[in-house]
Amino acid sequence: MTSGHVQCVEFLASHGVNIDHNIKHLGTPLYVACENQQVNCAKKLLESGANVNSGKGLDSPLHVAARNCSAELVTLLIDFGADIWVKNVENKRPMELVPASSPVGRLFLQKEGPLSLMQLCRLCIRRCFGHKQHQKITGLLLPDELKHFLLHV
Image 1 (cartoon, one colour):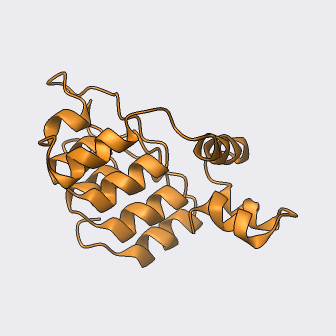
Image 2 (tube, one colour):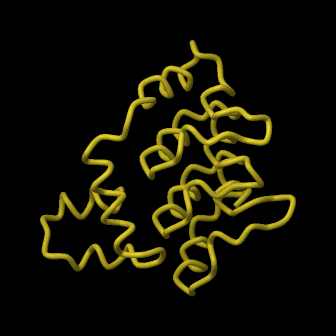
């Protein structure tokens, strides 16, 4: 995930590899992708069912995205349901790792409230399909716009 090989993620996910496998001293693939600011890999991992809150020890992918001041990754992770209130080993929430006046700090302030009903519905529906079954959403008898929303396309 350090080099951002989206095709590798697609191949591994399609062959049933545990995309949440936690590698000692590195963390989960999503954590590594966020640490290396590989937005496309992080998105593909999340689309493939990666746990948005599973990182390295108590450090979540959102913590590392915040530390790297990556507004794009922070937005992506929050859109996929990342817990903005989780604390790391230093007892800090992701929003406490960035200056409040920075673009990422302002982003956290915007997202600080509860998720919108739309976001909650998307997360609930995705959970109903299960960890590796999100591709089945395309088979639902729904308008394409709604399928794209559910799939984060």
